Image (cartoon, rainbow, N blue to C red; front, side, top):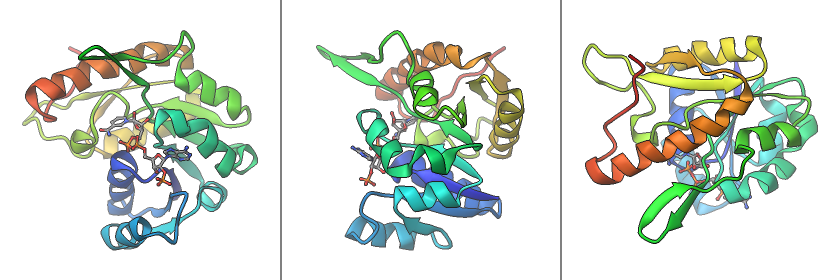
Length: 208
Ligand SMILES: NC(=O)c1ccc[n+]([C@@H]2O[C@H](COP(=O)([O-])OP(=O)(O)OC[C@H]3O[C@@H](n4cnc5c(N)ncnc54)[C@H](OP(=O)(O)O)[C@@H]3O)[C@@H](O)[C@H]2O)c1
């Protein structure tokens, strides 16, 4: 499968490594594919194509959105909704807001995933990989316990294909419902983030 990773921060590079390890073809997007950062990405992600957002979106059979929340709209404009039409788009994003010395959920009533679905009306958006940090996202090792990856989306077939990926990456997928449930998953991410600040990144949710 050809995977278009839209964003090249910690999440984008981690998931790119996961897809490459599973034998997929990976295009990873940055706004400046000729920059020094892009050159180091090419070294770090041997076998991946480091490119711009439109090329990654157009080339992809499956897209994964891994962009800073306040850059999502701009990134999708660069990617082009038409290049993502008819495709599954995994949304990993979170909106985080500092209040005093606390970090809290920073989105509105409507989740980022629902907003993205509005911007990409002809794509199937599935929320996934937002309730864990990048350092623990791939092949998490908790002994004989498999942690839970919560997913949400309105397209059952798209959720099924994302569940397969989540399983390959070492998680037990849990279908949390329609895309509206991204509201809960995006807020839940702050529980992970705040615990990570207190204890480090090696922890994950498990539904028991
Ligand atoms: N870090 C984690 O552990 C973690 C875990 C789960 C979910 N998330 C969420 O996943 C998303 C990605 O997080 P991250 O830590 O990997 O990286 P990030 O620093 O939040 O985002 C990096 C990417 O965002 C792009 N970007 C930033 N502003 C942009 C703009 N105005 N227009 C277009 N692109 C823009 C950057 O493009 P350039 O390459 O061109 O600079 C870069 O590729 C975030 O929404 C985050 O909340 C993060």
